[in-house]
View 1 (spheres, one colour):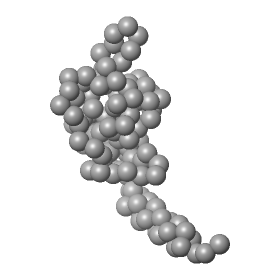
View 2 (view 1 turned 30 degrees about the vertical axis):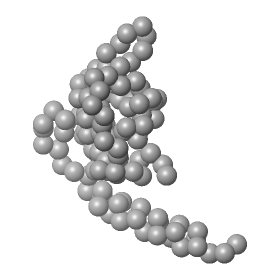
View 3 (view 1 turned 180 degrees about the vertical axis):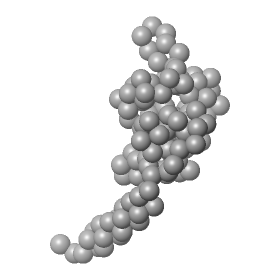
View 4 (view 1 turned 180 degrees about the horizontal axis):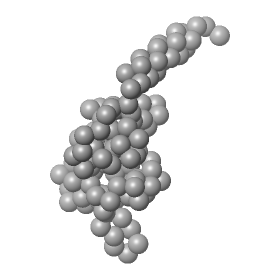
Length: 119
């Protein structure tokens, strides 16, 4: 399963810890490490603590990453649209997001049918 196929509601619970490494956050949020580093540049609210050239994310960072992931992967926002949404500004949702979700669902059904065909 690809990272963005997993719905935010299906992600594992966030453990009661103060800090998380980038690898732990990657697993908890279903987002690869290089994507997390990119999002740090795009979303200024995301500021992991840095010690000895390592990133340590707080629980609020993990929650923010999950929200960003939901906006981008599930709701179809662009980076700019997600930024505005996080700032609380009204953003018109992408027109075709519902249609795209339906097409993706239909394609997944076709893949499942093809998987069931004996070779």
